[in-house]
Amino acid sequence: MENLQTNSMKAIKPILTIIACCFVINSTAQKTIDTIATKVGSYDIPIKIQLPKKSIEKSPIFFFVHGGGWNGGTQNEVPPATISGDANFLVNELGIIYVGLAYRCKGNNATFADAINDLESSVKWFLDNANRFNADTSRIGFGGASAGSTLSAVMAQKYPNCKVYIGSEGMYNLVDHDEKESPFPSTEARKIYGLDTTEKSKMASAYYNLRDKPPSSLLLHGKEDRLCHYTQSIHFAEKIKEASGKANVLLYDKINHTCLSAAYPDVFKKSVMEIANLFITEFNIKNINIVTIQNTLDRRLENQYPSTTITESKIIGLWKYNNEHLIFKPNGKGEVKLNNSVNDFNYIIKNDSSIKIVQEQKERIFYLRKNNSTMFELFTNNSEKIYRVFDYFKQL
Image (cartoon, rainbow, N blue to C red; front, side):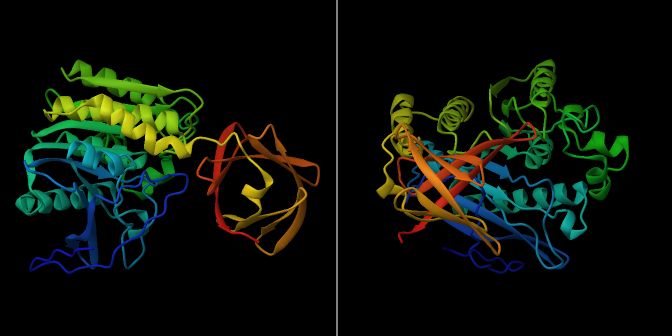
Protein backbone atom coordinates (compact mmCIF):
# COMPACT_ATOMS: atom_id res chain seq x y z
CA MET A 1 0.00 0.00 0.00
CA GLU A 2 1.38 3.36 -0.95
CA ASN A 3 0.69 6.69 0.70
CA LEU A 4 0.68 9.96 -1.21
CA GLN A 5 1.27 13.18 0.66
CA THR A 6 1.01 16.87 -0.06
CA ASN A 7 1.56 19.74 2.33
CA SER A 8 -2.06 19.66 3.35
CA MET A 9 -2.51 15.91 3.56
CA LYS A 10 -1.52 13.10 5.82
CA ALA A 11 -1.48 9.38 5.17
CA ILE A 12 -4.06 7.01 6.53
CA LYS A 13 -3.98 3.32 7.23
CA PRO A 14 -5.36 1.03 4.56
CA ILE A 15 -9.08 0.59 4.78
CA LEU A 16 -10.69 -2.79 4.35
CA THR A 17 -14.35 -2.57 3.49
CA ILE A 18 -16.53 -5.65 3.48
CA ILE A 19 -19.78 -5.22 1.58
CA ALA A 20 -22.47 -7.81 2.22
CA CYS A 21 -23.37 -9.91 -0.80
CA CYS A 22 -20.68 -8.34 -2.97
CA PHE A 23 -18.04 -10.79 -4.16
CA VAL A 24 -14.75 -9.56 -5.55
CA ILE A 25 -13.49 -10.93 -8.84
CA ASN A 26 -9.90 -11.21 -7.71
CA SER A 27 -6.93 -9.97 -9.65
CA THR A 28 -3.48 -9.63 -8.16
CA ALA A 29 -2.37 -7.30 -10.93
CA GLN A 30 -3.95 -4.06 -9.76
CA LYS A 31 -2.28 -1.51 -7.55
CA THR A 32 -4.57 0.04 -4.95
CA ILE A 33 -3.75 3.27 -3.12
CA ASP A 34 -5.62 4.66 -0.12
CA THR A 35 -4.86 8.23 0.85
CA ILE A 36 -6.43 11.54 1.85
CA ALA A 37 -7.71 13.81 -0.89
CA THR A 38 -8.79 16.75 1.22
CA LYS A 39 -9.64 17.89 4.73
CA VAL A 40 -12.85 19.58 5.85
CA GLY A 41 -12.80 20.89 9.39
CA SER A 42 -11.70 17.95 11.53
CA TYR A 43 -12.59 15.41 8.85
CA ASP A 44 -10.16 13.71 6.51
CA ILE A 45 -11.86 12.85 3.22
CA PRO A 46 -10.30 9.61 1.92
CA ILE A 47 -9.90 8.49 -1.65
CA LYS A 48 -9.24 5.02 -3.07
CA ILE A 49 -7.36 4.66 -6.36
CA GLN A 50 -7.09 1.45 -8.33
CA LEU A 51 -4.49 1.52 -11.09
CA PRO A 52 -3.87 -0.89 -13.96
CA LYS A 53 -0.77 -3.03 -13.78
CA LYS A 54 0.68 -1.51 -16.92
CA SER A 55 -0.33 1.59 -18.81
CA ILE A 56 1.80 2.82 -21.69
CA GLU A 57 -0.61 5.55 -22.69
CA LYS A 58 -2.52 7.77 -20.30
CA SER A 59 -5.56 6.04 -18.83
CA PRO A 60 -9.19 7.22 -18.66
CA ILE A 61 -10.55 7.93 -15.18
CA PHE A 62 -13.77 6.61 -13.68
CA PHE A 63 -14.95 8.18 -10.41
CA PHE A 64 -17.23 5.99 -8.28
CA VAL A 65 -19.47 7.22 -5.44
CA HIS A 66 -20.58 4.64 -2.87
CA GLY A 67 -24.12 4.18 -1.60
CA GLY A 68 -25.43 3.42 1.86
CA GLY A 69 -28.48 5.67 2.16
CA TRP A 70 -26.21 8.61 3.12
CA ASN A 71 -25.93 6.85 6.47
CA GLY A 72 -22.74 6.34 8.46
CA GLY A 73 -20.01 8.59 9.69
CA THR A 74 -19.08 9.62 13.23
CA GLN A 75 -17.79 12.69 15.00
CA ASN A 76 -14.30 11.59 14.03
CA GLU A 77 -14.47 10.12 10.55
CA VAL A 78 -16.47 9.80 7.37
CA PRO A 79 -17.45 6.48 5.75
CA PRO A 80 -14.59 5.03 3.67
CA ALA A 81 -14.19 5.33 -0.07
CA THR A 82 -15.05 2.15 -1.98
CA ILE A 83 -14.85 0.97 -5.58
CA SER A 84 -17.52 -0.92 -7.51
CA GLY A 85 -17.15 -4.66 -8.11
CA ASP A 86 -16.56 -4.29 -11.85
CA ALA A 87 -13.34 -2.37 -11.15
CA ASN A 88 -11.53 -5.52 -10.09
CA PHE A 89 -11.99 -6.85 -13.59
CA LEU A 90 -12.00 -3.84 -15.91
CA VAL A 91 -9.05 -1.91 -14.48
CA ASN A 92 -6.60 -4.22 -16.18
CA GLU A 93 -8.72 -5.46 -19.05
CA LEU A 94 -9.34 -1.93 -20.35
CA GLY A 95 -6.56 0.04 -18.66
CA ILE A 96 -8.96 2.34 -16.78
CA ILE A 97 -8.19 4.05 -13.47
CA TYR A 98 -11.01 3.60 -10.96
CA VAL A 99 -11.23 6.21 -8.20
CA GLY A 100 -13.48 5.66 -5.18
CA LEU A 101 -14.74 8.89 -3.61
CA ALA A 102 -15.84 9.44 -0.01
CA TYR A 103 -18.06 12.13 1.44
CA ARG A 104 -19.63 13.28 4.69
CA CYS A 105 -22.91 11.59 5.57
CA LYS A 106 -25.75 11.99 8.05
CA GLY A 107 -23.61 10.68 10.90
CA ASN A 108 -21.27 13.62 10.28
CA ASN A 109 -24.19 16.07 10.62
CA ALA A 110 -23.65 16.87 6.95
CA THR A 111 -25.95 17.80 4.09
CA PHE A 112 -26.22 16.82 0.45
CA ALA A 113 -24.51 20.10 -0.44
CA ASP A 114 -21.63 19.20 1.89
CA ALA A 115 -21.30 15.84 0.15
CA ILE A 116 -21.11 17.50 -3.27
CA ASN A 117 -18.42 19.86 -1.95
CA ASP A 118 -16.42 16.87 -0.66
CA LEU A 119 -16.72 15.08 -3.99
CA GLU A 120 -15.72 18.16 -5.95
CA SER A 121 -12.67 18.69 -3.72
CA SER A 122 -11.56 15.06 -4.12
CA VAL A 123 -12.02 15.15 -7.89
CA LYS A 124 -10.01 18.38 -8.05
CA TRP A 125 -7.23 16.80 -6.01
CA PHE A 126 -7.05 13.81 -8.31
CA LEU A 127 -7.16 15.85 -11.51
CA ASP A 128 -4.47 18.17 -10.14
CA ASN A 129 -2.32 15.09 -9.46
CA ALA A 130 -3.27 13.24 -12.66
CA ASN A 131 0.30 13.06 -13.95
CA ARG A 132 1.32 10.98 -10.92
CA PHE A 133 -1.09 8.30 -12.03
CA ASN A 134 -0.60 8.61 -15.79
CA ALA A 135 -4.26 9.68 -16.01
CA ASP A 136 -5.96 11.30 -18.98
CA THR A 137 -8.07 14.19 -17.68
CA SER A 138 -9.77 14.61 -21.07
CA ARG A 139 -11.52 11.24 -20.60
CA ILE A 140 -13.39 10.96 -17.34
CA GLY A 141 -16.56 9.25 -16.19
CA PHE A 142 -18.73 9.09 -13.08
CA GLY A 143 -20.81 6.37 -11.54
CA GLY A 144 -22.50 5.36 -8.33
CA ALA A 145 -24.77 2.84 -6.69
CA SER A 146 -28.00 3.49 -4.79
CA ALA A 147 -27.60 6.74 -2.81
CA GLY A 148 -24.27 7.22 -4.56
CA SER A 149 -26.05 7.35 -7.90
CA THR A 150 -27.94 10.47 -6.83
CA LEU A 151 -24.69 12.25 -6.00
CA SER A 152 -22.68 10.92 -8.95
CA ALA A 153 -25.37 11.79 -11.49
CA VAL A 154 -25.25 15.41 -10.30
CA MET A 155 -21.45 15.35 -10.43
CA ALA A 156 -21.43 14.02 -14.00
CA GLN A 157 -23.20 17.15 -15.23
CA LYS A 158 -20.53 19.46 -13.82
CA TYR A 159 -17.56 18.33 -15.93
CA PRO A 160 -17.42 18.95 -19.69
CA ASN A 161 -14.87 16.14 -20.08
CA CYS A 162 -17.21 13.60 -18.48
CA LYS A 163 -18.01 11.24 -21.33
CA VAL A 164 -19.65 8.39 -19.38
CA TYR A 165 -22.16 7.99 -16.58
CA ILE A 166 -23.06 4.62 -15.01
CA GLY A 167 -25.79 4.40 -12.40
CA SER A 168 -26.80 1.27 -10.55
CA GLU A 169 -30.16 0.98 -8.74
CA GLY A 170 -30.32 4.77 -8.75
CA MET A 171 -32.51 7.66 -7.67
CA TYR A 172 -32.36 10.63 -10.03
CA ASN A 173 -35.54 12.52 -9.21
CA LEU A 174 -36.08 13.28 -5.52
CA VAL A 175 -39.19 15.35 -6.15
CA ASP A 176 -41.58 13.27 -8.24
CA HIS A 177 -41.44 9.84 -6.67
CA ASP A 178 -43.82 7.76 -4.59
CA GLU A 179 -42.29 6.82 -1.23
CA LYS A 180 -44.40 3.66 -1.20
CA GLU A 181 -42.57 2.51 -4.34
CA SER A 182 -39.22 4.13 -3.50
CA PRO A 183 -38.72 4.34 0.29
CA PHE A 184 -35.32 5.93 -0.31
CA PRO A 185 -34.92 8.74 0.33
CA SER A 186 -37.77 9.17 2.78
CA THR A 187 -39.08 12.58 3.74
CA GLU A 188 -37.25 12.24 7.05
CA ALA A 189 -33.97 11.25 5.36
CA ARG A 190 -34.18 14.23 3.03
CA LYS A 191 -34.85 16.53 5.94
CA ILE A 192 -31.84 15.23 7.90
CA TYR A 193 -29.59 15.56 4.84
CA GLY A 194 -30.54 19.17 4.13
CA LEU A 195 -33.17 18.47 1.47
CA ASP A 196 -36.17 19.71 3.42
CA THR A 197 -37.74 21.75 0.63
CA THR A 198 -38.88 20.92 -2.87
CA GLU A 199 -36.38 23.39 -4.29
CA LYS A 200 -33.45 21.78 -2.47
CA SER A 201 -34.57 18.31 -3.55
CA LYS A 202 -34.82 19.57 -7.10
CA MET A 203 -31.26 20.92 -6.97
CA ALA A 204 -30.10 17.48 -5.76
CA SER A 205 -31.81 15.71 -8.68
CA ALA A 206 -29.83 15.23 -11.90
CA TYR A 207 -33.17 14.80 -13.63
CA TYR A 208 -33.69 18.57 -13.36
CA ASN A 209 -30.07 19.62 -13.83
CA LEU A 210 -28.81 17.94 -16.97
CA ARG A 211 -26.14 19.74 -18.93
CA ASP A 212 -26.44 20.23 -22.67
CA LYS A 213 -25.75 16.85 -24.32
CA PRO A 214 -25.28 14.83 -21.11
CA PRO A 215 -22.63 12.10 -20.94
CA SER A 216 -23.52 8.74 -22.48
CA SER A 217 -25.28 6.88 -19.72
CA LEU A 218 -25.87 3.27 -18.71
CA LEU A 219 -28.51 2.74 -16.03
CA LEU A 220 -28.76 -0.64 -14.30
CA HIS A 221 -31.79 -1.59 -12.24
CA GLY A 222 -33.53 -4.62 -10.77
CA LYS A 223 -37.26 -4.78 -11.44
CA GLU A 224 -37.86 -5.97 -7.88
CA ASP A 225 -35.93 -3.12 -6.28
CA ARG A 226 -37.69 -2.31 -2.99
CA LEU A 227 -35.68 0.85 -2.21
CA CYS A 228 -35.42 2.72 -5.51
CA HIS A 229 -38.09 1.89 -8.06
CA TYR A 230 -36.78 0.90 -11.47
CA THR A 231 -38.94 3.52 -13.20
CA GLN A 232 -36.44 6.08 -11.88
CA SER A 233 -33.92 4.75 -14.40
CA ILE A 234 -36.47 4.65 -17.22
CA HIS A 235 -37.57 8.26 -16.72
CA PHE A 236 -34.00 9.50 -16.27
CA ALA A 237 -32.96 7.86 -19.54
CA GLU A 238 -35.87 9.55 -21.31
CA LYS A 239 -34.79 12.90 -19.89
CA ILE A 240 -31.18 12.35 -21.03
CA LYS A 241 -32.35 11.61 -24.56
CA GLU A 242 -34.51 14.75 -24.55
CA ALA A 243 -31.32 16.68 -23.80
CA SER A 244 -29.59 15.10 -26.85
CA GLY A 245 -27.67 12.56 -24.81
CA LYS A 246 -27.43 8.79 -25.21
CA ALA A 247 -28.85 6.47 -22.56
CA ASN A 248 -29.35 2.75 -22.20
CA VAL A 249 -31.36 1.08 -19.44
CA LEU A 250 -30.72 -2.51 -18.39
CA LEU A 251 -33.56 -3.95 -16.33
CA TYR A 252 -33.23 -7.31 -14.57
CA ASP A 253 -36.14 -9.53 -13.62
CA LYS A 254 -36.16 -11.01 -10.09
CA ILE A 255 -33.34 -8.72 -8.94
CA ASN A 256 -33.73 -6.42 -5.97
CA HIS A 257 -31.18 -3.75 -5.07
CA THR A 258 -27.98 -5.07 -6.62
CA CYS A 259 -26.80 -5.18 -10.23
CA LEU A 260 -23.03 -5.25 -9.76
CA SER A 261 -22.55 -8.20 -7.44
CA ALA A 262 -21.01 -11.47 -8.57
CA ALA A 263 -23.45 -13.09 -6.15
CA TYR A 264 -25.68 -13.01 -9.24
CA PRO A 265 -23.13 -14.05 -11.86
CA ASP A 266 -25.36 -13.78 -14.94
CA VAL A 267 -26.50 -10.29 -13.98
CA PHE A 268 -22.96 -9.27 -13.08
CA LYS A 269 -21.60 -10.56 -16.40
CA LYS A 270 -24.24 -8.73 -18.43
CA SER A 271 -23.66 -5.50 -16.52
CA VAL A 272 -19.86 -5.66 -16.75
CA MET A 273 -19.88 -6.39 -20.47
CA GLU A 274 -22.23 -3.46 -21.11
CA ILE A 275 -19.96 -1.23 -19.04
CA ALA A 276 -16.93 -2.48 -20.98
CA ASN A 277 -18.59 -1.72 -24.31
CA LEU A 278 -19.55 1.76 -23.12
CA PHE A 279 -15.99 2.48 -21.96
CA ILE A 280 -14.48 1.20 -25.20
CA THR A 281 -16.79 3.37 -27.30
CA GLU A 282 -16.89 6.60 -25.33
CA PHE A 283 -13.28 6.57 -24.09
CA ASN A 284 -12.11 5.55 -27.57
CA ILE A 285 -10.06 2.61 -26.25
CA LYS A 286 -8.16 0.85 -29.03
CA ASN A 287 -6.93 -2.69 -29.64
CA ILE A 288 -9.45 -4.41 -27.38
CA ASN A 289 -10.87 -7.84 -28.20
CA ILE A 290 -14.29 -7.91 -26.57
CA VAL A 291 -14.61 -11.68 -27.05
CA THR A 292 -11.38 -12.23 -25.12
CA ILE A 293 -12.71 -10.03 -22.31
CA GLN A 294 -15.94 -12.02 -22.14
CA ASN A 295 -14.10 -15.35 -22.09
CA THR A 296 -11.84 -14.11 -19.29
CA LEU A 297 -14.84 -12.94 -17.28
CA ASP A 298 -16.56 -16.29 -17.79
CA ARG A 299 -13.55 -18.09 -16.34
CA ARG A 300 -13.39 -15.79 -13.32
CA LEU A 301 -17.09 -16.16 -12.62
CA GLU A 302 -17.19 -19.92 -13.00
CA ASN A 303 -16.88 -20.63 -9.28
CA GLN A 304 -19.66 -18.19 -8.43
CA TYR A 305 -22.33 -20.48 -9.89
CA PRO A 306 -24.12 -22.98 -7.66
CA SER A 307 -22.59 -26.41 -7.34
CA THR A 308 -24.44 -29.43 -8.70
CA THR A 309 -22.16 -31.93 -6.94
CA ILE A 310 -22.86 -31.26 -3.27
CA THR A 311 -21.81 -33.99 -0.85
CA GLU A 312 -21.89 -34.16 2.91
CA SER A 313 -18.09 -34.03 3.10
CA LYS A 314 -18.10 -30.64 1.33
CA ILE A 315 -20.37 -28.95 3.86
CA ILE A 316 -19.35 -30.48 7.21
CA GLY A 317 -17.89 -27.70 9.33
CA LEU A 318 -18.61 -24.18 10.54
CA TRP A 319 -20.18 -21.54 8.27
CA LYS A 320 -20.67 -17.92 9.32
CA TYR A 321 -22.90 -15.02 8.34
CA ASN A 322 -22.50 -12.05 10.68
CA ASN A 323 -23.46 -13.36 14.14
CA GLU A 324 -25.24 -16.48 12.84
CA HIS A 325 -23.19 -19.70 12.78
CA LEU A 326 -24.25 -22.91 11.04
CA ILE A 327 -22.51 -26.10 12.12
CA PHE A 328 -23.02 -29.06 9.79
CA LYS A 329 -22.26 -32.45 11.33
CA PRO A 330 -22.24 -35.94 9.80
CA ASN A 331 -25.43 -37.95 9.27
CA GLY A 332 -27.69 -34.99 8.51
CA LYS A 333 -27.36 -33.32 11.90
CA GLY A 334 -26.34 -29.81 12.81
CA GLU A 335 -26.90 -26.79 14.98
CA VAL A 336 -27.36 -23.06 14.49
CA LYS A 337 -25.88 -20.52 16.89
CA LEU A 338 -27.40 -17.04 16.87
CA ASN A 339 -26.32 -14.55 19.52
CA ASN A 340 -26.59 -16.57 22.75
CA SER A 341 -29.01 -19.24 21.54
CA VAL A 342 -28.19 -22.71 20.17
CA ASN A 343 -30.73 -24.86 18.30
CA ASP A 344 -30.43 -28.23 16.60
CA PHE A 345 -31.46 -28.87 13.01
CA ASN A 346 -31.63 -31.72 10.51
CA TYR A 347 -30.54 -31.36 6.92
CA ILE A 348 -30.76 -33.25 3.66
CA ILE A 349 -28.98 -32.74 0.35
CA LYS A 350 -31.53 -32.46 -2.49
CA ASN A 351 -30.52 -33.63 -5.97
CA ASP A 352 -26.86 -32.83 -5.24
CA SER A 353 -27.67 -29.14 -5.81
CA SER A 354 -29.22 -27.70 -2.63
CA ILE A 355 -29.29 -28.23 1.12
CA LYS A 356 -32.56 -28.20 3.04
CA ILE A 357 -32.35 -27.41 6.74
CA VAL A 358 -35.34 -28.27 8.93
CA GLN A 359 -35.44 -26.51 12.29
CA GLU A 360 -38.53 -26.53 14.50
CA GLN A 361 -40.70 -27.41 11.46
CA LYS A 362 -39.31 -24.47 9.50
CA GLU A 363 -37.41 -25.09 6.27
CA ARG A 364 -34.46 -23.15 4.88
CA ILE A 365 -32.81 -23.79 1.51
CA PHE A 366 -29.10 -23.21 0.89
CA TYR A 367 -26.90 -23.44 -2.20
CA LEU A 368 -23.19 -24.16 -2.28
CA ARG A 369 -20.99 -22.32 -4.74
CA LYS A 370 -18.59 -24.24 -6.95
CA ASN A 371 -15.69 -22.75 -5.01
CA ASN A 372 -16.95 -24.77 -1.97
CA SER A 373 -16.12 -21.82 0.28
CA THR A 374 -19.39 -19.90 0.25
CA MET A 375 -22.97 -21.01 0.81
CA PHE A 376 -25.92 -18.74 0.15
CA GLU A 377 -29.52 -18.57 1.27
CA LEU A 378 -32.18 -16.88 -0.82
CA PHE A 379 -35.66 -16.32 0.58
CA THR A 380 -38.56 -13.89 0.52
CA ASN A 381 -39.64 -11.82 3.49
CA ASN A 382 -42.69 -9.56 3.13
CA SER A 383 -42.31 -9.62 -0.68
CA GLU A 384 -38.65 -8.63 -0.40
CA LYS A 385 -35.97 -11.01 -1.61
CA ILE A 386 -33.27 -11.56 1.00
CA TYR A 387 -29.87 -12.87 0.01
CA ARG A 388 -27.42 -14.02 2.68
CA VAL A 389 -23.97 -15.50 2.23
CA PHE A 390 -22.32 -17.85 4.71
CA ASP A 391 -18.55 -18.22 4.49
CA TYR A 392 -16.79 -21.45 5.31
CA PHE A 393 -14.76 -20.99 8.48
CA LYS A 394 -13.29 -24.31 9.49
CA GLN A 395 -13.81 -28.03 9.42
CA LEU A 396 -14.89 -29.69 12.65
